[in-house]
Image 1: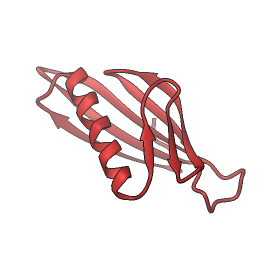
Image 2: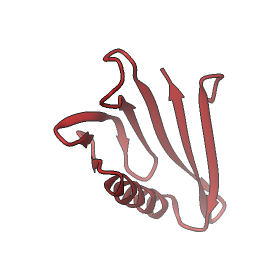
Image 3: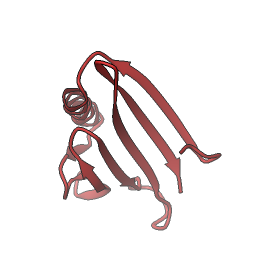
Image 4: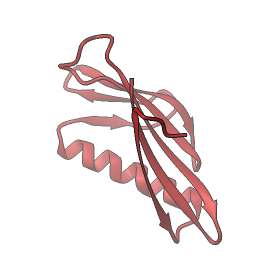
Length: 103
């Protein structure tokens, strides 16, 4: 649930949850790649900026949820945030929610 330190964005999709999850994760991989970041999705996934790991997958439930702990290369070592992607069934489609929480 969002709090004062979080930002949440939701959208409806005509895709079934599994297809919506796959599509959004693939788009995230592409978008981060364009920014010079490499996202390796999966239960042991991570996001790297060159040799520096800036994100780690802390929860991986295909078709439902992926949660990342995130720390940019130029942040203090103890400064982290959390990014969560949730996909929930809604009627014949799904609701996709992206939530960013500052640590």
